[in-house]
Length: 161
Image 1 (tube, rainbow, N blue to C red):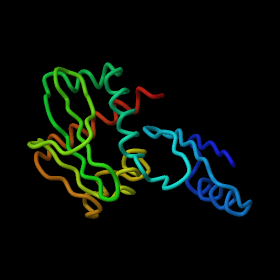
Image 2: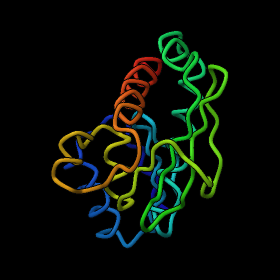
Image 3: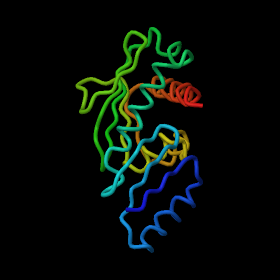
Image 4: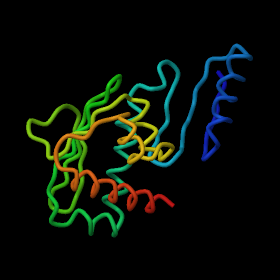
């Protein structure tokens, strides 16, 4: 088993690590520690990485004073429909965020898109605004709530540093 730890390494080197493991004929155990990402193990490395990343997002948002300020008085449901992944929603209520698997019956905002796009937006490898205008994912519901959720993401990302 070849263990590779990726810590803020350029994407080109990630591909090199994957190729190197295949060259050695080793199975790959990848531990991704990029912003809002988590450990992944052999098999389909896409399974659950968006959900797991947003679990970290929720934890960071609940610790960040800036994020708490954004969440105060803003009770919302942000639904994620992840094609090729797991659907989940983030509930912001009483100034705190929580993540629940599944589909909420009446979200304020729904983000729909392929797992790869959702993951790259989460890790900030892909700019969410550019991806939206390039029709890589869709937003249903309040655009102002979607934009505020983006600001919440920026605040949570600062908390990790």
